[in-house]
Amino acid sequence: MWPWETENGRAWLVLNVALLLLLGGAWAGGAHGAVLLSEVLADPASDWNGDGALSSRDDEWVEVVNTGPEAVDLADYWLRDALGVEAQLRLSGELASGETALFTGGAAVAWQQANGVAVTGLSLNNGGDQLELFRGDPVLPGATLVDALIYPAHAGVDDRSLARMLPENEWVLCDALSPYGGAVEPAGTGCPPTPGEWNECEGLVPAVERSWGEIKVDYR
Image 1: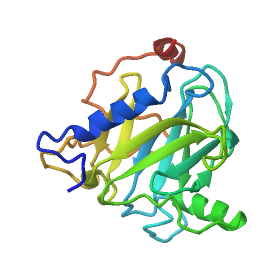
Image 2: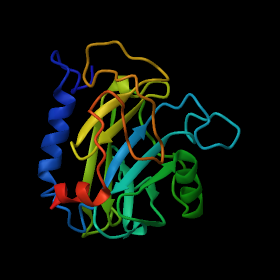
Image 3: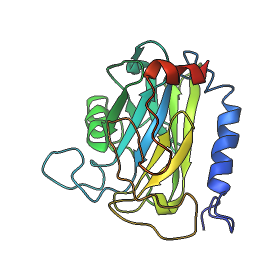
Image 4: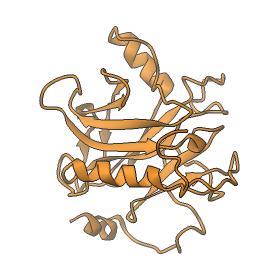
């Protein structure tokens, strides 16, 4: 049994909250907290990267979101499996305020091959894992852990994703493609994964029309 799968089924959330508190203000809206993990899919059962082939490695994906008021250069950010020493991927591109960016296992493989490091893809463990987002290369001094997600085993099953709902900062299970009826939290929502899009789950939270300017006030 994974340590977060306790009888009350909520230990995974407690661990995430405790870890985020240790980050020293990842939600403060400053430069180190603007980019956050937004959605993760660890066990692909579909061709998510669109290359015409299903791959348990290449079709994994991680989404990030820019919660800050200005565009961010994602080349400053690195993704790492917590069990590793080196990062699995250095992000790339410019991310505008309020926008999301998607990175697949295939993108990680291409970066690893280009940089002469072990080719593992995103290395997301289907049985539960921890994913870390750094500002700076995590193997070098000065790197800052800006966000982390500990996800439970039932989230790593056949096209289920964990998605962060903002501004509530609530992680929910998107299990429309592989329904979950168990008792371990987070419970199934029936919502689909939304790679590369703003996370929404109809019926989970009453729909309220809000501008991105209004949402950003929550981070100040």
